[in-house]
Image (cartoon, rainbow, N blue to C red):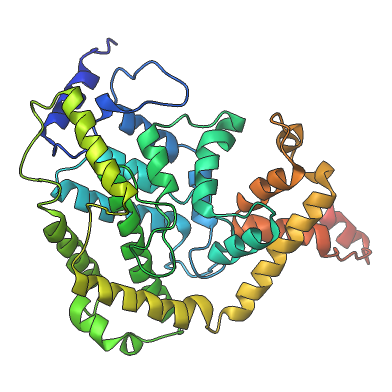
Length: 386
């Protein structure tokens, strides 16, 4: 079967209809290691596909979002959270005439470095690992160094930047901790992450009986809406309306040259250096969303009936980390090889942070929980055990 060599070219040409502020795959800053282009996919498409096919992405289905190792079918996991972030981010990107492929790729990879047991695991590793631990930095390490048996995924600069800068400080859903993403698509993912987790965590907390919908702050509900769908729709629409003029959504970039594109990128990055993202929401909506987020911190994330289980999870993560630092010979063979000659603590941090909830529980049980031994009482029992 012949592959027509102009397929990728046609895809790249279609990006000319995007806003001049949109990231363009043909003008990407490139990869850590140069590669031949795909005959049928633009660069950001390739990144999204590599992330979806990665082992780290698959493991997200068994990693905690808020509730540790949930048994119910409808609780959000780190995987379903990632899919919701991608959906919300793509909706905003499409409405603002930006690059959906880049937006989806950043959203797909943003949480690959998350620990088992959610933020409980992250806080523990950040406390006990000497260099500190932050899941966004670990996500970048996963795609750069750990995936594909240490080869990494060799993603584009734009995707890597968005993954690193998606995290925010406690103060607000728009608070900066790692700076503003250098692409508007990365800025969208950062804010979509907050929209997704605040709303689906409310649903999980109600499902778990920790709160009721009547407990939600009345002012936030009045502004954002009573239901999950209303809140997401109202915030997304507000972001699109507030950001519309700043990204010049009504114009396309049909005649944009590479030099003009580079000038636009410098403009966006200069604003980012000043902590001025182009994707924003109205002040009233932002205050309501921040109030809702703070309510979740106080009633669910920090002080809730699940606190005892969070403490247990943190003790488990700390115990596993200490055990493998003392017994590196028990690490998987591929980690013992350590081709980069990194400190054992770094290797153990990679191993423990990459575990799913259930795998961490199983490893802990194998190491520390004694196995019961019983002697067969009859030949029939013995036969049944063979």
